Amino acid sequence: MKLKITKALKIVLPLLLGVFLVWYSLSKVSVGEIWQYLKESDYGWIVFGVFLGLLSHMSRAYRWRFQLEPMGYHVRYANSFMAVFATYLINYTIPRAGEVARASILSNYEEVPFEKGFGTIVAERIADLIVMMGIIIATLFLQFDFIYGFFIERLNPLKIGVLAIVGVIGALLFFNYLKRSDSKFAQKIRTFISGLVEGLFSIFKMKKKWAFIFHTLFIWAMYVLMFYVTSFAIPDLKGMSLGVILVGFISASFSIAATNGGIGSYPLAVYAAFSLFGIAEDPSIAFGWIMWASQTLMIIIFGGLSLIYLPIYNRKNKG
Image 1 (cartoon, rainbow, N blue to C red):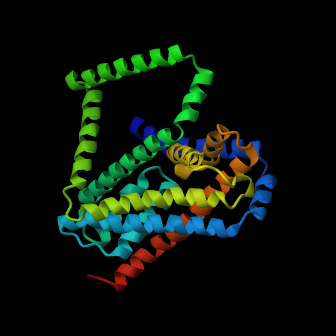
Image 2 (cartoon, rainbow, N blue to C red):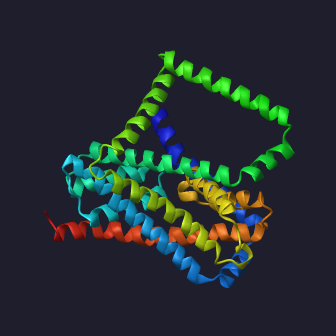
Image 3 (cartoon, rainbow, N blue to C red):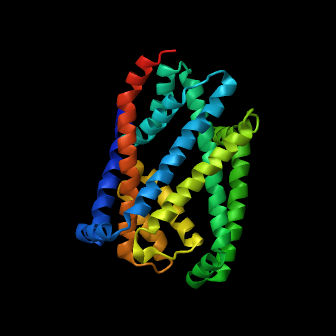
């Protein structure tokens, strides 16, 4: 009974949070103002952003095949493409259910064992996490003066130093605890870290590892570019530096994990990042909604068509 309640809460709470954040963001900027920005937007840049997003998803579908080939599975690209889009669409309803569905689709239509298909999905998430960490580090370098000044203005340098020392000591104590403890929590963390390391090194053992790495970098380059070029659609946001764009992109990316597909949280995350640089609230939230809505519409269209066409395609192309 308790397990059922926990599962239900995992589905319901993100949706409720998303609904609340939609209401909150629309209370900050009215629907009329967002509609006005939408009418005045340059649709060419919005369409271009959607196209770049589509390229990233196509590349993700292609990259997946590199992981499956060493295990002896030559997956048809159409199935890989449709499975990827089905994943994104399903994740809008039940968090992380899309990954399970994606592995199930390959199991049903390409006879790839579920556990092997799911394992490759975990491995690619590790690769994506590493690239995301790289983007964060690059952003810290690009915006070092701003970030340093931002914290110096709000925190005493002595406090920052003390916090840094405490943080380092805390981290050392935590890793020592993980190394020595036999508790279930420590075992889970050790298993997770071990999986991350194993997943990272498995990439370099692939026959087509350089192609995999290229596609991984390409996917994230397209993510950043689609965010960047879509900002050109709103005249008030033109001229933003790469550093500002990256801060906004990172904030928006993390918001997707907060609610199903970033519902409600995405526009607020964009505004929270842009406001640090003195960018006005109205165009920031409007851009967040335009960015989220355009990419979501693409996922709904391609994801919906994928779920409909998957059985049809595989009936026509058996074997």
